[in-house]
Image (tube, rainbow, N blue to C red):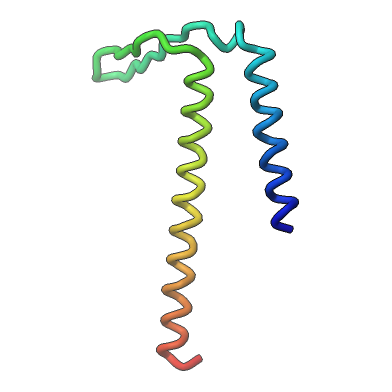
Length: 88
């Protein structure tokens, strides 16, 4: 099972690199992000390449997934400790 996970990870990285190399011109276009709230003046970012936004969004999603998994693991550990203490 461990080898299958490594193989899938290598394939994912390979296909990601192929995607980025084949779409390099489209992903290199500059994009400006804007935040326009009601009571706050409009804020804009510096022009960023689209691939940078895609990579940052991927890593933010990965960090949130890891944080949720850690929170769930800690919650389950607390429940296990409570069961052991109560004797059930």
